[in-house]
Image (cartoon, rainbow over all chains, first blue to last red; front, side, top):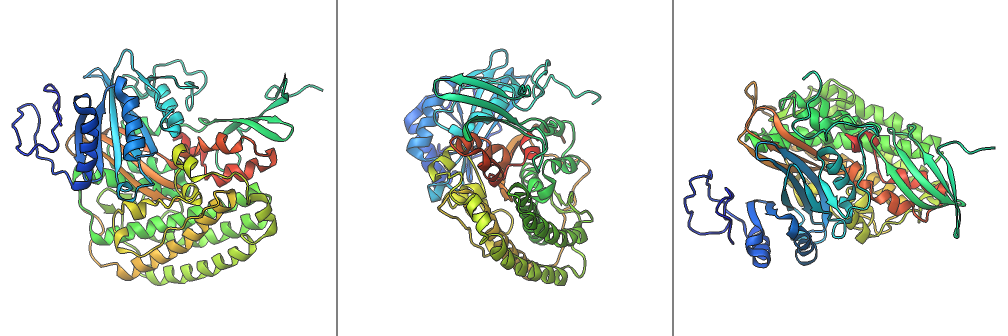
Length: 185
Length: 375
């Protein structure tokens, strides 16, 4: 398990709590179940992914767009998280990042059923592009379409990246970006 | 005689394909359009087009503090207003580290289950309209009023309760609530027994729904559908059981599932769940301790920067909130993962190859509520 030096995220299972000055370090106690999942992921992907947290029943990794398809396939086929729950985009103008989080649940393996696995992509705000995960999780189709129109994230390979909820004549910037303001507020 | 502009005919080698725009009139629960391509009366393609009742709930959340967000967040689903607020309160409690008194947890479970019944009856009534079965509309709508009266007595509002707040519930139950609830629930159970004979054994209802729109377990998981739709396909996945919140782990109830995966199973699973809801409410009324029902919060509750992902089993399925806090009293980002939105991919999947006349039976069995899906 490793993490890039510039990231404030914590290392999950390292025994000694090494002092990182930039991060608000508190030692995470990873439970056996979560540790098993985290170990499998880090064993396969190593440096490419970054553990953000492993709370009871909630795990989140940060993934790069170039690895996300492999990561999702591994999560789906090898670990067994098979049910897409949500795709949420969040705009962080200060860091110049749009973060897309996939939340994946599991309903076939009883011991994982209580857990929600999340993996996030940090995309540049000017050109947010990431491959679509429809080949792995069929159900993310409409979630990705929504994230496209609400935050302007391009999901490459998506069969129908069109307007979904907004009016047909919407001519403004994607409304869930922070620089879009509601009138009068 | 020309076709209206919304209908088009395409000639191809396979035959004549007619495109029909179904909606966006109100088909029973909110404005929604379905673009259907038919060859004869067989559907060869369906394209859901939601968005007619989009209100920007997620954006609105970013402009209000946590408490101000309560009333407008239940608007997308007023038929199950406790269900849609529940995960929001759980998420805010995790972010701001608020504890909930035990009595409040029991009251929340009571109200969530009561709202589940209110919701399922509403849904069943509209299913009756969709299938042309007017008794099936009148009876559930009538019985629903009794449960609404009960919810009204506790919360002061018929459907938009705004009853759940971070830290508990808004007020305690009225004095005679227990006796009244038990009397209503006993009558309701008696009515459910009648529903079984009159609706679920009705040959007309069976003909319209059995074997129609079969969703296999594998497809159900992969398409991401949830709730009764998922359980009707044989996947026993209920958040109340797999990840109990509040006091659900101290209550006895069963999770029902069926293996058929057809529209009938999708209508029968919610029916069985109403029996379980009655059981849960009665247990809560017995076990409920006395004490406070709300943790006093400061004027602007807030928590440290962080995120929370909380989910509950609402009437239509798994309802989750992804809440991001930046340390201010207003949420930085609120994402509602609503069950109706998750049922959309199942619609084109099931409608392809079905008869046009089966479209209402399939559409409504998916438990899809346009207002909730659009948010």
